[in-house]
Amino acid sequence: MIIHHDNIKSELCELIIDKFDELNEQQIISQRTNDDIRIFGFEKVLDKNIVDLFFDIDNKASIKFFKKKPVYQTLMVNKTFVPFDKLSLGSGSGWHRDSYIERQMKTIYYLTKVNIENGPFTYLEPKLKIFSRFYPMKARLSENVDNRLSFCSNKISMTSEKPGLGFSIITNYIHRGIPITKNVRYAIQVYSGLYKKLDFIEDLKIKL
Ligand SMILES: [Fe+2]
Image 1 (cartoon, protein in one colour):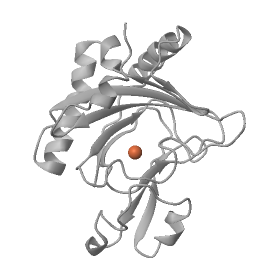
Image 2 (spheres, helix red, strand yellow; image 1 turned 30 degrees about the vertical axis):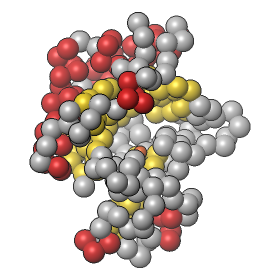
Image 3 (cartoon, helix red, strand yellow; image 1 turned 45 degrees about the vertical axis):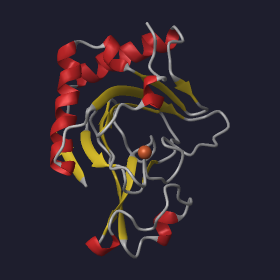
């Protein structure tokens, strides 16, 4: 359910963060909540060789997971931070599956160091195959699902002492970003559609 990648270089992380900050300063963003700012369509502002690097890695992971390349890919960069009111659910707003029905994966690279305080991607890995990726049969799960499912799953947080950690993961499994209590987290993610263009994401892309 997870494939680990080689880290991307810290210079590349800085370049992407600088671009994000530049766009954010000009208010060219797709979405904002109290703890998260997102820019969809980031491929519009990166060099083709950088975009291809991310898309190729995502393609290879998709072939490994689903024996098929996605027909649609786009890049999203987000900055997650401590909200003023301290009421944060973290990236993805709590425990969830990206989809219950359609097969779904994501390729994620952290652009900053990520420890338990600044929002690590965390997932529940079934201990046995019989629990499969469909247990329990819900897309949105409660705050304490990690405790309730501890008998059949391991909770794994992806942390890194260096910027640039990357992985691809099947997001039909239960996952979330842990709420940030300190610093910020920047990440770049490949959003892909295995069978079709994702219209709701098309609409979120920045216009330049
Ligand atoms: Fe998700």
